[in-house]
Image (cartoon, rainbow, N blue to C red; front, side, top):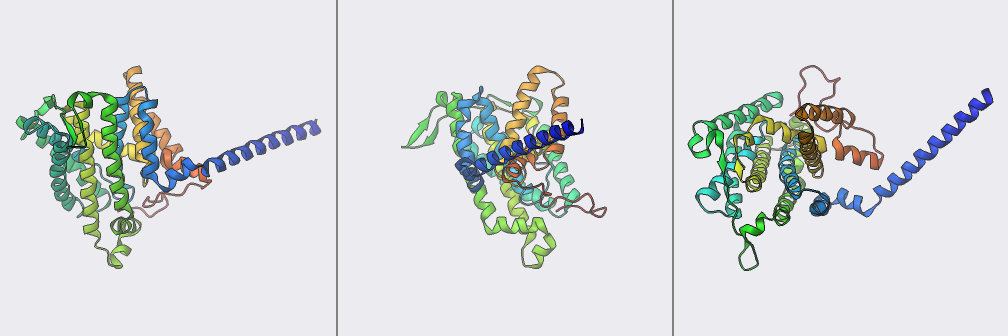
Length: 371
């Protein structure tokens, strides 16, 4: 009996070792593959290739367009939160203002994609600069609460004092989408842009350009300084960084890119409503950034894809889809602390879990907060 038990144990041990060896071999092959190296070393290029294929593999092209738009919004928050360690609960302020600015511009001035983009920048940049100046006077949880308070302030301003302009509860309906392109090079007519696949690739081209700009910001002295501030603001200030100016600059960039995402949201849904400014959307954008993996360019798009796909199918299956969605995200956060993409990278490279930079340890003294 003892000999049989030993043989069974030896067999199970050998089988387990063999399985683990095969997993290690497969992991090593994938880690050394061209696809993984491309995404790891050139995330914008690798992500662009993946996003390019979405319309051909997804059952609904419009869902792919939404992933592009909200992935961009989540990446803009990740610029502030993931790379800068500054958590904002009011990012829908800039997404919503981008939606309204684009919608009002195309309804009352001229129905042009280029005007929509310009209007979103002209509105969100000064608003982000003003709100950022006030919010960045505080740190940690106080900063986060200020962003939430200003988010609600903008929401109710658009609802009542500016209700005649914004449509109030009814919102802006029938936002047009007209000819766009580069004169003499190419031009898309209204009917062509209404074709889902064509519009997807128009949005894709802009999103890829915006991602490239954000990647340059992260790799610039400003981005490196911001990451130094994330690690220790006091130390960064001691070596000569103007921490307030650098954080405000990135705060404005994050707001502008969220507004640009909003401008494409206005053209996708042809509607601008107050839900685009609601604090709930701020939470959704934050969930997308964390779910995919903070401090990366691929992560927010993975998070947006997971969230929107689950929302699409769960909302059709049950009226309690939000409850189920919340439970799923709790499990995701507990099991995948680095996010879907961050955990995937850790598994592929064989690295163990390390606490995300800027995250406070549970053993830290009471009252410790992050910048």
